[in-house]
Image (tube, rainbow, N blue to C red; front, side):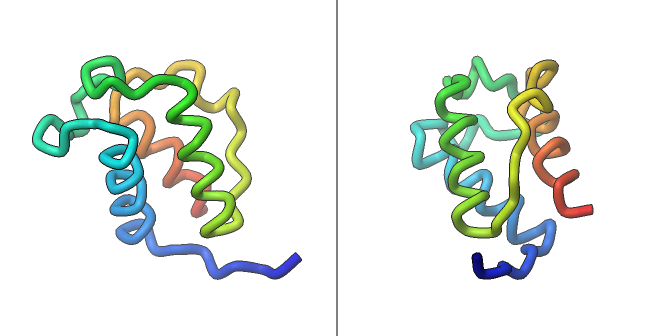
Amino acid sequence: MELKTPPSAEKMGARILEALVEFGADPEMMSPEATLEDLEIDSLDMFELAQILHQEYGIEVNPDDFEDVKTLGDAQQVLLGYLK
């Protein structure tokens, strides 16, 4: 398997937001405090986002890390934590 270069936090953060818009989230509602429910992002969308990050950056996302995620900021923090 080809090793992929990890993205910068800025690049990955932008890709996360881009994917959420692709899933139907309103870009004007996006803020760290916005709940995933308000953005109409469900667990299937989060799974698909994990697949995108895996395909594009080689990041293995653990679904258990999202058990307590309620807001966009929470989700971003978990996902960006994989860059460490």
